[in-house]
Length: 448
Image (cartoon, rainbow, N blue to C red; front, side):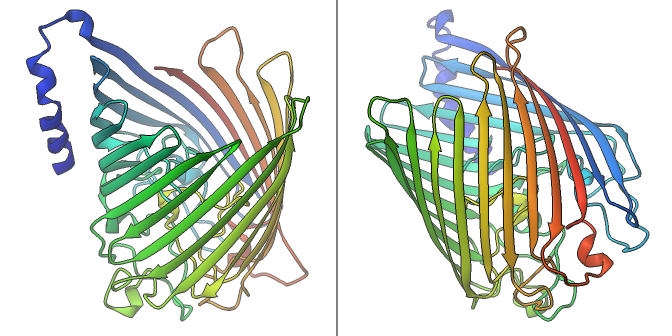
């Protein structure tokens, strides 16, 4: 909360001028309603689950002379209808992985709750700006990943500079987080392990949840606009855990005389452990301080007013596991496919094809992902944190924005994952991982 009080003092000058002109003070409501149906089905021996949840964010933005802004929002959650998602699967004894994430992972039986999600003060002009308090974020390795009833949010300070029209520098200091699938705000170390923890390098269950010591996250991000593209560089420094460097270059070649583009992209990154990796006791370490990992990712594609198609590849290598807490957002690489991540592995080869078609006369689109993910040996605990088999994933999706209701949108997603190869898997290597049909149906309405 110390960042919130800092923001309060930044905004104090606004109050002294509030009587100058009523027109200088503008209030805009910020309302977001979301309903989310989720179901996961298996062919035979595992427990099927489903849940219908809803969330409502009530808040607003107060602006003063375009330079000062105060943003607040309280989000409430409801489990409207669900199976017994708090009960473990009878065969494996494992907890449900998907539907519980709609609500509070630390209290899956809580059907109604809420939290102050946004509370920030901001000053900005044409050259720089600063925001303090609770806010959203969209960086390479800490981001909203808005795939549940609420996004991940952070508490801290964000400062940005615009040296020229082509350059932007972003700095973040984060002291607390409210991760998706939670009802509270946590210190940084407390967030690590709210999602399933997997196993240690020796094959025993990981013990880092509740035992990870990390006080802050620091991020710098530099973006440079190129002709028909951009270059982006960043570092995500997690105190006492890890440092991740990431670079991304993208370029779109316009086909002369036609409304068509050739899409090219390249990413490269390096990650290493720092400090104690979260705990001085090796049995409770989250990231081995000796780990050194690298990754490259590429994309080639084509787009026109109706179609977007691209082929993506990612290679992860090095020594130890590439780690980024699942609580903090999605993977940055091009082969990320919604409803799964390739985090927690020493070695990854992933190929993903994507196709999207936008109907020309309405706000309707369909899309598909087809991904093949070859992972570290499932028997090598040091290289495969979650005992996850190599897999094939297919996503089929539909998005629609009706013209008759402003700010309303629908999203339907159907996903199937199957293991690659003919290896005989144990029930624990299958449940929550492969051999499933997973369905999401989402309705959003916003007023802001």
